[in-house]
Amino acid sequence: QKEVEQNSGPLSVPEGAIASLNCTYSDRGSQSFFWYRQYSGKSPELIMSIYSNGDKEDGRFTAQLNKASQYVSLLIRDSQPSDSATYLCAVNKETSGSRLTFGEGTQLTVNP
Amino acid sequence: GAVVSQHPSWVICKSGTSVKIECRSLDFQATTMFWYRQFPKQSLMLMATSNEGSKATYEQGVEKDKFLINHASLTLSTLTVTSAHPEDSSFYICRGSQGAMIYGYTFGSGTRLTVV
Image 1 (cartoon, rainbow over the protein chains, first blue to last red):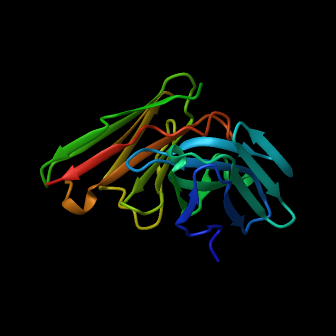
Image 2 (cartoon, chains in turn red, brown):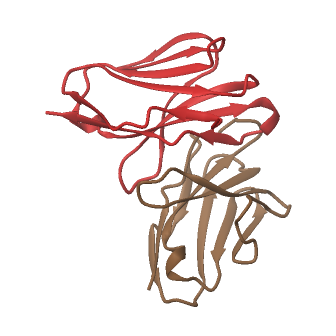
């Protein structure tokens, strides 16, 4: 079992729809969770971080964390073509310092 | 805050030569620098972790004599690809961290290496 698993995708949604990206992790010692966006040919860009159970909203983005289910998700409301990218889920464990474990990424395409 | 400047953004070199990639933390002290490699349409692969003033720790399968990492100061870490070959062509990205996930979120802009 991979430490961090994401929907393999690709995921395609129409413009204006809600895009839902999911991530599960295997280590219950994980404490910090991050969503990065990576455009083709560019380095990853942090868009959301979440540390406690529940929802965290930032503009059109909402991160959801459920530690009991070892599940973290990212919702993108009112999806725009500019949101088309690969989204990477990353997890940090207290015992690993600042090391991040990444999922394989989910490619999202928002169709105009 | 937490800006990591990476240079060069792209480089083309001849097979057998060496290439140096620099990552500088501009507004924080990067006690740790992570170096990643990414092949097209693949996820990030952690190559090595370096702590300022210490030898780097390499991931399994990464040749430490080929990928030389220097982290001599809190603001600068370098990766040198020695005797580069076409199979080393990839996207190399660094990520700096100060302490336990303080300012540890930001990647450098990446270096596209092409070996011909």
